[in-house]
Each structure stands twice: as structure tokens, then as C-alpha cells.
Image (cartoon, rainbow, N blue to C red; front, side, top):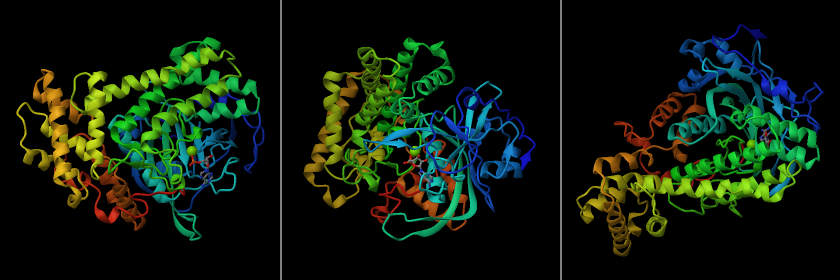
Length: 531
Ligand code: AMP
Ligand code: MG
């Protein structure tokens, strides 16, 4: 079925036009050599329902509210119909999974529909996730369940509104079909409602897109992909050449550093930082078993699949991003044999991360500038104070602003503000209170060295310490309701998360710390890769 175009959607498919296609047209699982992608169509579904959509993303694509409410919209973004100009395909890529080279992976359940260019000339790739098998589906079905799709839909929009670089999500559509999953891989498969998310980004290219041709010794394909990325993802770098390849690598390193500094700022743990889940644009991509720090713990990961090594724990993310960038540089080595030059390009990562992380820490603490000689000690003290007893990362930071005034707060005021962040009041001894008071005093002394109006300090802190994040249990509440056919909560959660830095009267439910029932509940504190 082909439909008349939705108003405003025009396609210009630079990716499929510019890179070599797999010559095989049939859709069966296989190894694909000497090609960047395979053409493949989404699998139609029987009873699509629009669960939610993002008005902001629709606007980016020049889609009106009427467009989004149309049956064409539903059919196209469920994978049942193509618009003229779409040229659907799945990308071929590899990757390191949990530190081990995994060979060919590819878009196993993602199908790119095409690149649309909006009225402002911005290029957006539209991609369905969960729209059926592709040549890269390996042993799996190419489908996605509602719970993981809802988590991806809400989180990518939440991250955007928090100011974190991310892929976006246009729509969340229930397919009306059941998908069987064994959520904890423990021999209890059950049917779950299926869903499709339409993801939107300038490009979905990953580190793994370059690693695979490099690993296979396919230098022509590697060069073609690097040059395509320079031309389309980084046009400001100029015409591709070995010099530009290095600037490209440095730029990716810098963008990755900025992304990670943001993750650390908001307490986001990606959960699966495999190199196939690293965007060449430094965007947060592939929302799976991610989570948000509740009790502050640098060793925490939400991903039960990683429970042993905890490779992708919160505190390890900056290191892992670096490791992943080194793999990308290794792939580039076949094109640029000059190792010191590659190392010099990679050095953009630690340099940018240090600068961004200092800026972020200063902003979170209300400081105009970060002075490494004294402020790292202050930050260490904060981490110690948040580790004395289980302390909510988001609430503790948000509440600090209330204590940043020129007049010293009483101990009662300090505990009234920060006490809300404590999960286990019985554990909060006088010694803990004393240590927290001492840190607050040290922080305030440092703060008051800077002569700045109180209101400016508060505004600065409130602009980087969110009030609302997609707490793991909030996503689960929306999932429980959506699985029962009630979509109002998904939409309300999205509405709240559109303004994460402003207190929203009546929406206190979304700002509180995790309730006790959610502590051990699957989906709230621990997640598997099953999706
Ligand atoms: P992830 O860990 O979700 O990034 O997935 C790793 C690889 O497995 C990617 O190549 C995915 O496309 C693929 N994959 C994950 N789930 C499925 C699925 N249900 N069907 C097909 N491929 C999948
Ligand atoms: Mg992935």
C-alpha cells in the first residue's frame, strides 16, 4: 500500500544514494559483505493504535496536529504503509559487546524509512524500531514489546528536554499483536503486547558501522562510510581527506565527551554501552535497560545482564566511552596509519570531558567557575555525604538551591530540605547529620566567596539540577497502565518531562523519591536486555 504524502514530508535519501547496497533483495538472515545496508520493508501489523506521540518532534518534521491524528500517520508509523519517496533499509554494522568483538550485528529490528528534509533544511532520518525482521535479525524476531518501546519513547524525549544530546521519538504505536519474551531469561516466556517506536535523528550511524568493514579488511567500504559521514554528519569539516578523517575523529570524541558529562549530570545510566550503541553524532542512542540513579551509588547499573562485572555502571561511563572511542580509532587505523595523529585526535575526549565535567559540577553546585584545586575536594565531600546513607541523587541536588542563600540556614532548615532525599530515616544517625551539616557549611563558604546575587545562583542551579527525571518506577507505572489499555499516564508523564526544571504544581507525584514498593520490583530497579 502506498499513500499520498503526509503534508510536508519530502524525502532525500542521501544514505541509500551515497553508499553501496546489499544486492540481495530477499529478506532472510545472513552475513552481508561489501554493503552498508540492505533494503527491507517493515512487516505490517494487524491493529495499530497510536499510544502517544511527541508534538515537538512532529513539529521538527513539519507535521501538523491533524497529520498526527490521521490514519495515514498511524499506518505509516506502524509500518503498514510507505510514503512515496521512502526507501526503507536496515544498516549493516558490528560492535564490541561487553568488551568482546561480536562480528556482524546490524539493524536487527530497526528499519530506516528515509531521510526527510524540513522547511529549515534540517535532515531527519525516520526509523521504526520493532517493525519486523531484517537480514540482521540473527536468531531473534525483529519485534519489540510495549514496555521497552514505551521506555524508549519517554526517555528519549525526557533526555532531550533535559538538554542531553539524544535521538528523538515521534510516535509510540501498539501493534495489536503479541510478542513472546522471557523477560529474565529464566524459562518463563509469556506473550506481551507488541509496539513500534518511530525514532528520529539526523543519522543513526554507530561506531560499529566503521568497525565492521575495518575488521573485515574492506577498506573501500570503510573509506566510503567515513567520507559519507563527513559529508552528511559533519559537513562543516569540508571535503574528505586523511586530514579531515582525523578532525572527524576528534569531533566525535568531543561530542561523546559532552554527552557523557550530561549523563553524569542528570544521573543517567545507559546500561549497554556497546560500541554498536555509540552514535557517531554523540547522541544517546538505543534505550534498553537504562536507569536513573536514585540512591547515589557510582557502582550501580540497572542492567541485570551486567550484574556480575558491572562494566556499564554509572561511575564507569566516562571510562567506557573512552574505551569505545579507542575502538573507533582502531577501525580508522586502516585509513590513517599515523598512530600519534590518531592519539592526538582522541585526546579531544579527555580534554573536553574534563572541561565539560568541571562546568557541569560548578553549575550543579551553584558556582560561577570551577577551581580544580579546591572544588574537586568539595565534590568528593558531596559524594561522601551522599554515600553515608542511601540518598536520592536528583532530590539532594535539587534541594541544595534552597540552602544557597546569603543567610546561613539553621540545621533544621538543612534537614528539612535535604532530609527528603534520605531513603532510610532510621539509618540517619547524629554522626550522619553532623557530616552532612559540615559539608553544607564547607560548600556555602565556598559559594559565598563568589559575590553573586542569590537569585542568580538559585536560577543557575535550578537550570541544571532537574526536578523531574524518568525515575525507573515512573516508567513502570506508565507501562502497567498502558498494558491494561490506559494510555493517559504515558501522555501525562511525557507532559511533565517536557519541563523538567520547573516545579509543576499538582505533579508532586513525579518529583518524589522512589517508593519502597519499587525497590525490588522488576522494571523499577533492575532490567534485563529483554525487549
Ligand atoms: P541491543 O543490545 O538492543 O543494542 O541489540 C544488539 C543487537 O541485537 C542489535 O543488532 C539489535 O538489532 C539486535 N536485536 C536486539 N533485539 C532484537 C530482536 N528482538 N530482533 C532482532 N534483532 C534484535
Ligand atoms: Mg543496539
